Image (cartoon, rainbow, N blue to C red):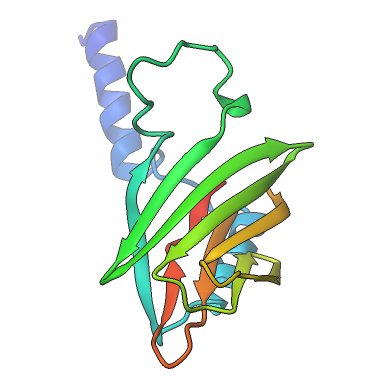
Length: 157
C-alpha cells in the first residue's frame, strides 16, 4: 500500500498530465492591451533597444535611499547610428520623461501608450519633455526628416 508521499507524488503527476499547472486564460484587459500594442507596430522603423537601464544596474557609490520609485530612472536606447537617452521620474502617479535623440533630426516624438498616442515637440538639439505619461507600457517614435523613423521597443515606465 502506497504511503502518503507516494500518493502525493502520484497526484502531482496526474495533475501535470491533466494540465492543471498551465496558466489559465489571459484576462480580458491584458488581451486588449496586447492587441492595442500590436496594432501600433511600425514595420518602417529602426528599432532602438535598451542598452543601459538604471533600474537594472544602479550606480555604484550611491546611498541606498530605500525608495527606488522616488529616484529618477535613466535609460539609454540604441539603434544603428542613433541614441535615445531618457530620464523618467514619477510625479502624482504618472511619469515625466525628459530625453534627447542623438543625432537630432526629428521635429516631434510620438509617445505611444496602449490606448493613446500624443505628439511632443523636439528642439533643434534633439531634446524633448513629456509630462503626465500613464504608468505602464510606452514606446517612442521619432519621425526623422529624410531617414527611417526610430522606434523604441515597448518598455514599462
